[in-house]
Structure formats: C-alpha cells, structure tokens
Image (cartoon, rainbow, N blue to C red; front, side, top):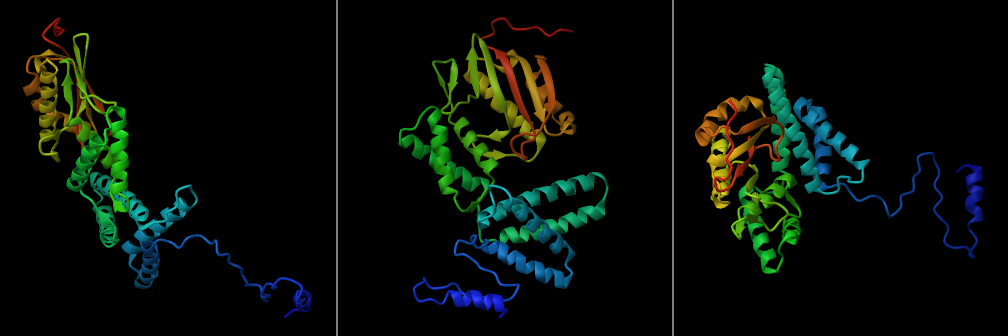
Length: 329
C-alpha cells in the first residue's frame, strides 16, 4: 500500500470514531451503492448472451438484429421511458419488426431481391425472440372479448356519457398489464366497440357514450363520420381493399337509413386511402352504391389509424329528400 494511503487509514483507527470505511488500493477500485439501477429485464440479459454467441458463430442476421435491439435500448435509456420490463422490450422489438417489414416492401418495390432476403431473415429472428419472450400476446379476437367485458362492467358501474370511454380504457389497461398488445389497436378496438353500440335518440342524432358519433343530423343534414370496413356483426376486417370498400359502403348505408336519409341523398363524399393505387380497384364498388347520384367527391391519400385499414369514407347527405342537390355537368 502506498505510504500516503497507509497514513490515511491509520488515522481512522481510533476506537472513538464510527467504523471506518474499507481502504482499497489500486487504480481500478470502485464503490457501489445499494441504490444502483434495477437489473435489466430477463429477456435483455438473454439477448446480451445471444450476442456473444452470435459473434463467435458469425451469424450475420442475428448479429444485425441484436445490435439494433441493443442500440434502441441504449437510446431509450437516455429518455424518460427506459426499458425496464420484458413487456416494454417486446414492444420495442415489434417496432423494429415493423420497420423491417416496411424495408421489405420498399426493397420488393425496387426489385432488390437480395435486400428482401436479408430483411426477411432478420424478421424471422425477431419473430423468434417475440415468440420466446414469455410475454403473453393477445390477438384481436381476445382483445375484443376483453374490451366488451370492460364496456359491460363500466356500464354496470354506472359510467355513461363521456366518462364511459375513460372508464373502459382504465379497465382495459389494467387487464392488459404485462401482456404484449398494440396499444394503438386497443384504442381503435375500444372505439369500434363503442360505435357498434350506437343508438338513435329522438330520431335525429346518434347518441354514443363517447365524444364521437357515427352520424349526426343538423338542420336536415346528415353528417356521417369517417367509416371503415369493419363488419360490426362479426368484428372482422377483410384484408382485401375491395371487400373493405363494400363493407364500408354497407356501414354508411345503414347509418344513413337509421338517420332518416339514404344513399341517394348523398351530396358530398370523401375517400381516404393509404395507397392511391387502390382507388381504381374500388371504383366499381362506389359506382354500384352511388349509381347516378354523382356526389361532389374528394380522394385523399393518407395513413389510417391501423395498418390493416385500406379505405375510409365519410359522406354528407340531405335528410328526407328536402332540397336535393343536382349534379353540375
């Protein structure tokens, strides 16, 4: 022990002092407090172990995936929402998975089969880690059942009006604690569950128990909200854009009839599609439903709430045939 350090330690040997701290020598000595950060989630520890194995095996796809996860975890640690649980880590992996799927679509569009294969191999690795994470994954059917139970429980507790939505979301969030779910999908499914229970009040307005209406009647006009292709009887959403367009128009037709209007009284329509290339495919469906009505129309290309939604349509119509508009030639 160096002389100076020895002298310092000898001065702390008086029995009148509190127990002296341990004197350690050497430049690498470190003190750790009991308030050190929480241990990383088990899945992250496994991934770090797999990184070492992948390095030795020169497993390029797995190395790329693991390095991406570690980098994303490091970035999260510098924010107010660091990764502390396996559920959070799985959510992070799902974001990387979505980016990889987007990269595959871009590579396929560019004719880069080599990049398609590269990204596809990485997606397989990501799928493997999600499946083996030990975190329970809920599908749409399971979430719908859970949400319906939450709606009934909230109503039974006396929640109504604008407070119902908040009450339902609280119950759903508690039930989903520790489970792997897409939170955006949850919010959308809660919204769809509410819309499927809509009613007409005094024959003039859809009364919904959230701050949202499928349709509203004002001064003889019917305003139908943006409507998607969910089949509210089965809770299903087709993967085909033409089938979604057909179901969307059926949903709008039902809303108009319940509000005292009809498809023939539509004067304004807005089509919203994530891909403008899909518009030619749905034109025959729209012609079938509108016939010779020829409403003023706008087509917008924009992302919708969920990736699986391929079309959304909103309309404005007169109610009861009063003052129908005429098409301008």
